[in-house]
Image 1 (cartoon, rainbow, N blue to C red):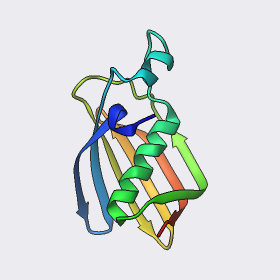
Image 2 (cartoon, rainbow, N blue to C red):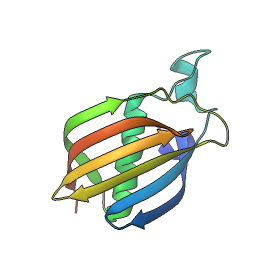
Image 3 (cartoon, rainbow, N blue to C red):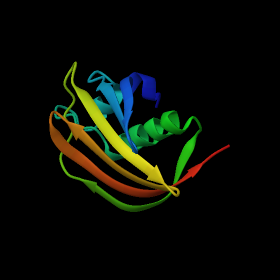
Length: 118
C-alpha cells in the first residue's frame, strides 16, 4: 500500500514538546473498497502507519514502533472527501504519546516505544 495514495500530509507544526500534523484522506483508495464494501472504515493499522510517518517526518529519520504499550481506537474513521485527520504526539526518551482526531472526534490514543533508525 502506498501511503501517498491513502492520505496526503497537508500541514505540520509544533507547540512546545508536541508535534501537530494534518492528513487529508483519499476516500477513493482501494483499502476502503475492501474494508468494508459499502461501509468504508479506515483500518487501525493504517492509522498507526500515519502516526509513524508523522513521527518520522518530525524526527527527520525513519521510525519503528518497538513496542506498543497501549493503543485504543476510540471511534471509526469513515472517509469523507476533503476531511482531514489531525495527529498530535510527543516523543521523550524513545516513548511516543499520541492522539488522532477526525471530524472533531478523538479516534486514537497511543503509547508506544519507538526506535529512531539512523
